[in-house]
Length: 183
Image (cartoon, rainbow, N blue to C red; front, side, top):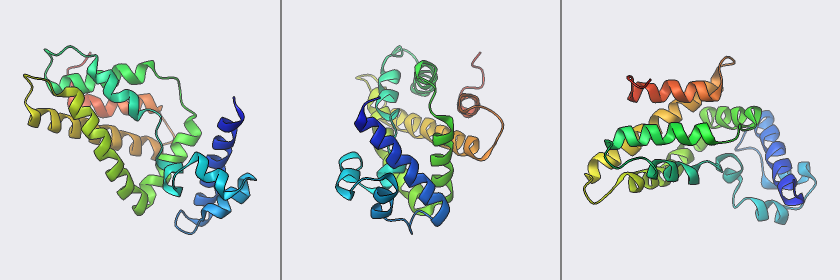
């Protein structure tokens, strides 16, 4: 792991520690930087905002690409669900503890939940664009993108609050609601 990656990871870990002990809104960037042993300038080289420490998701860019690889003759909702399944099956296992802590913090912090909604608008548009085609109904693509992203979000929140079950299991359970006949 490169020095920049280690610094970014250390910042994220110290930020989560502080958010959990004193609250997200009460924690400053200066406190995060000090806890990680770096300057505020270094913090901002790695994260644009305090919010970005929690909301940065390395999987967002690959979701639309995975959906785009699905056959165009499938209905938009099926393409979205199956594309997500395939994408998540190919991704490396995340640091489960860090992801659970991030998602739990988001679920319990109204300002972060609102930020996720804004952030999800971008992901939803990328999914809808991946589903849209010359013959595709734009409304069907948009609805399918919104529904699949809602299922994914609810699955993540449910997983973060339960000690039992893997992230993959909860995502699959959420997606199965949208495609119950999937074998």
